[in-house]
Structure formats: structure tokens, C-alpha cells
Image (tube, rainbow, N blue to C red):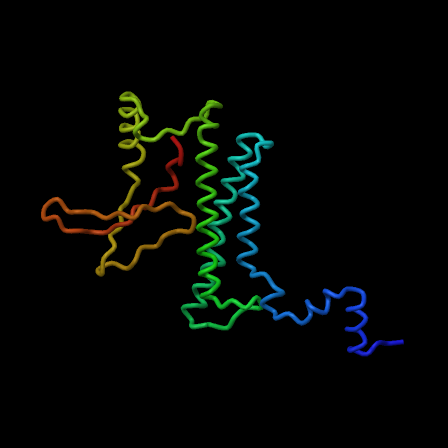
Length: 209
């Protein structure tokens, strides 16, 4: 015997009363936003960096992966949503959020994620130092180390750095994906005129010295 649709619903309800309630929910109540779900996944990746059962460098690696994942998320998914907003698209996705609402929710979730990343790094850094892996800031350098670093900068870094002016007379410079670029606010010595510039960090210079 084949059940008619109404009979099918009654049979499903008899087996699982929650099935009928779920079927009558609005789509926005049945679906989780894809971007928010991805951020929740990346949070779980980051939380592996807090797991003290992992070796120390493995925890640092998980933290690094979560940050790299976030870079790609902004390049692809956030860029896509911003494109939709710029195009005036307001139609919500199946979870009921418009592109602008998704961006607002992403902003909230990412801020919390980054705060946890920074907190986790603040916890890992002294543990690395205790294990013999020290990351030092400029203020921590000895005079001999400062002199060596100054020579290193003059010989290997300064010759390959090219500041790029940002003003109405120049098109906005190309910034490569996943590149490191410093945004600078400059003051000219001769007359105090304020200027803006970008300083891409060249890929041929190693990240850590």
C-alpha cells in the first residue's frame, strides 16, 4: 500500500513527533549559515592549539593553520559577500540572512576568534621560551645584536624595499594575496606635509631572522 502525502506525514509524526515540528519550521530555523559554520570549524582548529596533550610545536602549528585559514576565508568568502553587497543584492540565503547581515555576523564571530587566537599565542609564547625557542622584540635586543641587525637590514632588506605612494596622482598599487604590506602615514621633513604610502615586505627576505 502506498501512503498519500498526508498519511506519510502522520506516519512520520507517529514515529518521531519532532519530525513534524521540524518540517513546519521556517528555512531560517532549519539551516545554519555556511560562513558562520565555517568559522565554527576554524575555531575548533584553533582550540587544538589549547590542547596541552599535543606537543608544544604542534600546538603552535594548529594556531598557525587557523590564522592561514582565516586569510583564505576573507580572500574568498568575505570578498564574495562584499561583492554581493556592492551589487545591491539583498536576497537572503536559505538560512534567512542577507549578504549584509552575513558580513555583520562574520565581523562578530571573527572578532571573538581573533581574541582567542591572541590569547592562545600569549599563553604559548612563554612556553616556547622556556623550551629554548625565543621570539624577541626590538626592545629585548642587546647592543651587539642591534648592531648586527642594523648591518643585516642595510645589506639585505633596505635594497629590495620599495615604498609606494598613495595619492590622487597614482592609481592604487597592486597588493598581492597573502603578502605582507605596511601602511604608513608619513610627514615630510621640509614642510611637515602629511603623506600616505604602502611598503610591501619583499618575499625574497626571510620572515624570521
